[in-house]
Length: 413
Image (cartoon, rainbow, N blue to C red; front, side):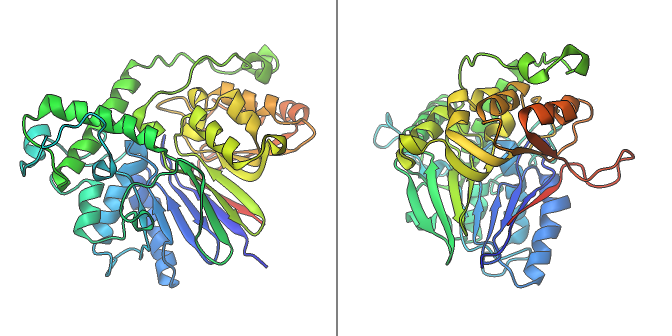
């Protein structure tokens, strides 16, 4: 009889930090910010280490600060792979500079040993989402540098090349656990690579090689791009009020355009199957890319794909969750990892689209790891739950703030 599946969502601010326990395997997906790792993920991993457990996979889906900052702190503190201070890790999945191809790269461009820190500067990694400088780039403190320094098995399933899947790729992780890799594709990695290449050409009149300093610069550049997007965003969402009527109808809108971020498009995304249960983890993926892979994975007459848990892409951002994608997936549990502060995630349009495109006769549960004050109040409305046949799960925090806002543990049996 398979073990129950435990899914833990840790307090990661506007980011992700997810631990999956299958009994015979442990998978950690992202680690949020430095404070997320230090205050929540680290104590949990040390307790598992004391029980004789080890991580089967540590997956850093992509390079944004809300996914990678805690990973830098984790590997830095864990130390040498053969003598870890927190927990042993069988393999790390993470795509960095050295895993990318450059379509327009001329032979001989950019080789040398100039420390990238001398060119780009840098500070400590992001403690929380409130940090102005979101990612640290001191020499030797990028995730890629640390993985090399401490000799981790890094992308070894892929012969130390990029974690990618132009076609769905099914891998066996343990006796009863299978992972089907759905992305990123080579084309999405190329998009990120070319953006990175143009950036380096602007700032560095030298030659690129594959030393750790270029990993540092790569991580810094990608975060600068994300910060620019954030600064340009206009957050004008209105607070939902019950007297305005059916909130689902109010937020049922036509979908306009999808996210075009190179970093989000590079997300490592996958389907897990264990004991007849299916779980889909989308990172911050771009919807058209997921749609294309799901169509390859599942015959059209068998859509929507029936799964037990979906980690909704990009914390429920509307640009990352097209109605077409939502129609292709029918889940029992929809997982939203965000405190809603920085980007106002999840967007109400996404939640409304899930409820509108999910058969009303089929029950579903929306799982939020933050209370978000009054922002999501109407989502928890009993009349709405009855009309659209759904329930909600929230962190176990009482009206006085006792408990951990940002932490939810879901058991799937």
